[in-house]
Image 1 (cartoon, one colour):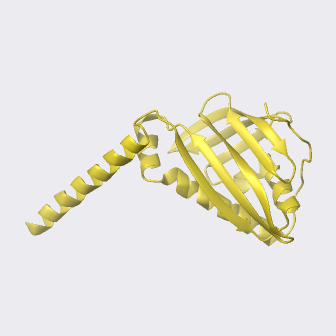
Image 2: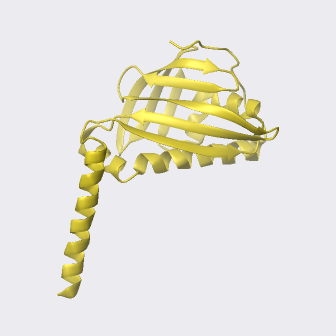
Image 3: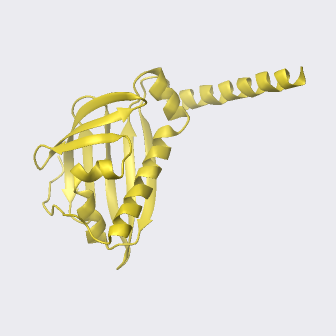
Length: 181
């Protein structure tokens, strides 16, 4: 009997916490944001160059199946989001070598953000990711409330760090500039 009371109390407390989280995120269909940083033991140029290799993202982003770079500004993404295959197009809205890459989706999954690169020393770079996204439907909203997107972003950055530090060099790099628009 006591275990049932404890179970019901735990479920009620969990429901209250999720309710607060939904209200904090303004409910279903509302935007959410994450900010994550990581330090990578490579120079800024190396970290930035590798991050411009968008078609390599599936190597460190577990939910991304494929990215095709259509031109200097446009990418087509295929990913598995909350167990569902999704596709969308994204536009790079600003790109400054060794400094930042900003984007926004133009079709499909609503998201946008910026990745910045900060020189800590000649051999250490801090990468900061800020991303806004809009969960679609109750399952994605629940995952967002439980921190799934934040955890995945953190994991993706850790995988990027591991991949790049293990390799020690970038596989390529695009040094062009895209002015903010």
